[in-house]
Length: 270
Image 1 (tube, rainbow, N blue to C red):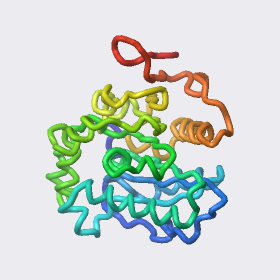
Image 2: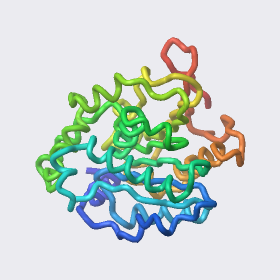
Image 3: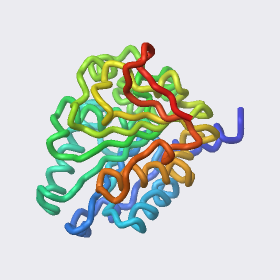
Image 4: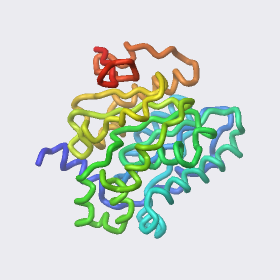
């Protein structure tokens, strides 16, 4: 077992998230807001770094996590978690108003939760963009190992991540809203969510608003605290705010894949 994989697995130890991190009353209505949606691994140490960076760069940050203390997460699965995300966005909208920007940045299985909210619960009317980090968009079999660990208390959520689950199948049959900007980042060195599971299914490609980028030498949990993925997220968010124009050099030297009339469904730029 590699050292990086061992470190990734350590992050799946169940812990609590400081409640003050989700305090909506602290949100500044003059700033854009990022909702961080975590997957199964949500140690405060990993979330603290990306939260701190986003706040330093001028964003409000609110957390939506998979809580090991909430019973309905365990029996209702990701549909229930997506509904919680919808309620959180509604509460935020009351605070910041309809004109302020709200983005969702989701890690791992949290990206599936965010996609369900946007695609099936019409979240595209209420948020301005989505970033997924190391998300198993096509489902991933490694989630089945969770049934042998403490994660079994999230049995329905674990099943929802599997490629054979109706949650993943229905999510990938549904169209992704053509008005929604989406950036998906994944890594060749992510053992828990390898590229074949993390690449977006071709059927959600509607226009150039959908972009995915492949990184190297980034493990599953390192998406939350390594500088390279954060810089890509920050630059993408700034393009949505009109602070900068998105060009291919933003994603150099990694491979940028986006919608194109290419036979394979991708166009690669180096």
